[in-house]
Length: 240
Image 1 (cartoon, one colour):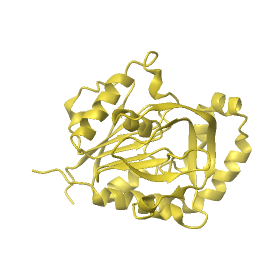
Image 2 (image 1 turned 60 degrees about the vertical axis):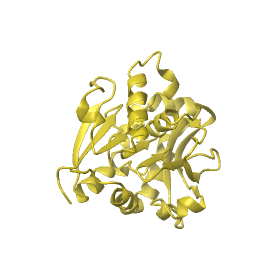
Image 3 (image 1 turned 45 degrees about the vertical axis):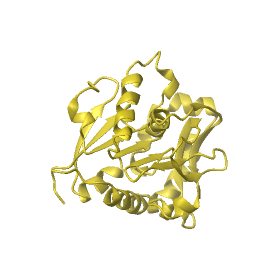
Image 4 (image 1 turned 90 degrees about the horizontal axis):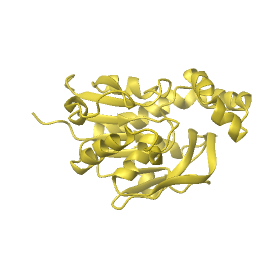
């Protein structure tokens, strides 16, 4: 695979990074560039024209544009990429941005969903790169309070007991994941610190969350590698 393919990741907070997705990208031959969504120039052609755009998570919401004006240009950027069928991956906040860019409604959910849990895959989900999540005891990390309506033209891939819309595809080049499979269990201590106010407000026990992370950790890297590896192998390669 050519090493000239560039993946640009938009990061919103330092500790919510590529995690387990980074080795999958390197294994597939991608060059990785990290950009800071709140402070970098999102009109930079190197971002818009990247062979793959990855929009990562963060503690703000799609509806917080008045407080965080960069969200408007970020949503516009994602909308243009999806309109042009350019490879795009959204995780958590990134998933919600993709839903909004496709015309879906994004709004506060009825409850915080934080911690490790299972998913129910749709038939389309079972046939997709997410198939490993249907294996016994497969767990993902949930960490969100907002949710979204499935955008028109999207393929529903997964649900949880609390929220029916957890993942969708849009064509072959766009994948949106409300949950985290990229989160590296070894590095989640930074999440516990960075999200301490949210965890406290939600009544989440950090020791219990840490113990659940230890139980999920042994299979996390191999499962993420299979999921991301399959998706990356199926998206369009740049021409020329």
